[in-house]
Image (cartoon, rainbow, N blue to C red; front, side, top):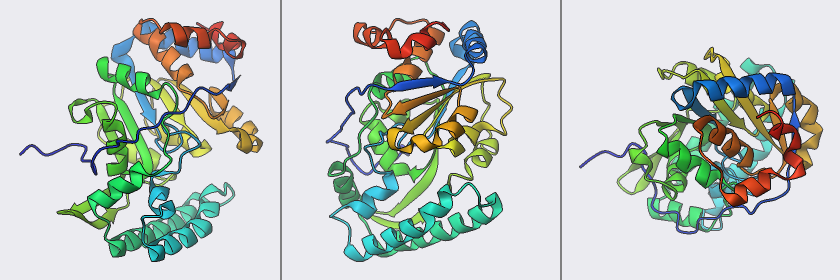
Length: 314
């Protein structure tokens, strides 16, 4: 029996995708971005790769994080939910506090993840219950992520996901789009749900917002020259900081109700997209590098005034 590279918890039968919502673009430095795009296009598909977060980057801002599915589900044991909620309320403000030094934050994140692992172990979730929790959740993929992902598969573009979420949930979601066990260029760096037969025995807690860069640095992957980096937090911008990648276009998704973070995003990301963004901008960039046409609907969307400044750079 062949071992699955990306084991799942079943099938995501209730797949949901966001509809298109008007979004606002802010470009940090148009001339610099133009130069980056030109370099990507000139070097083509063989030097292109994707580095991305998952929770609320591939999934929309309407979606809970993959960890939160279990904390929020009516199907989870109440004692488990109470523990997870108390941990969430205590540790999330620490995770987001930019004034806390990285060493101190890492200590708190390790403590949090140890407690979470123990709570999952005690709850003894089965694969079937885990799949039910996913299928009764409100996870939505971002609009146009599916064609973006399919084009990466088709063109054998390395697709590196670095996420503080849960591997089997992410695998199940992505497997609803494509058979990811055959996508040799995809890597997933995330927290692992370890099952003994049908019962969750252990959570292998590997990834936090503060460890993503180190994980990629020590991954042994031969990275390419040109990267599209995607994230929804300021910390996601730093995922590739140890990789010495010559050319990178970074795209940050910013929720409208987090607009107070705009100045921080503008200092980091080449493109900040405000709202509950679609994958239109990454899809357009990929199409230019790969040299394939957009669909009529995608072209019509990209021709709207919100993208005037970006269109001038191609």
